[in-house]
Image (tube, rainbow, N blue to C red; front, side, top):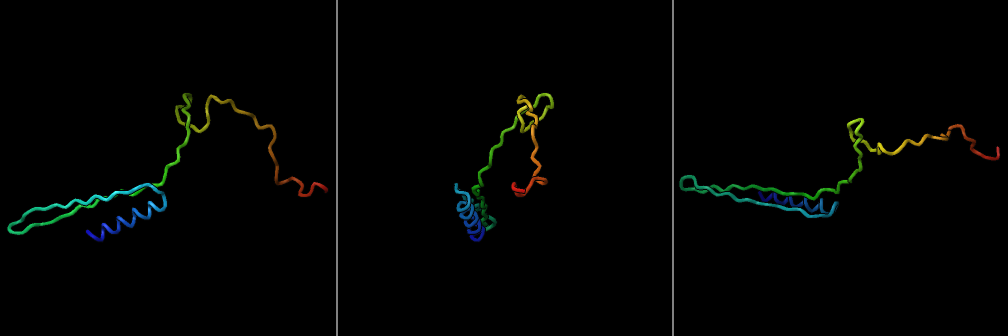
Length: 94
């Protein structure tokens, strides 16, 4: 159990260095009697700080019955000019 606790502690420390936050280690010791002997058991749980999750904005399109990144109430703006970078002159003096 000591090796597991040391591994958990190292994992938590590394995560805190990378993401900040805090971690936790919980150790439970269990004891029961079997004949004239006592049996010790243990349980180790730990939580590691996670990187922050980025939020995203979505709209619900009633007509399509699905979430979308584009606001369905916003009208489409037609493309007036498309740039053609492959056929442009490299030197305006030419």
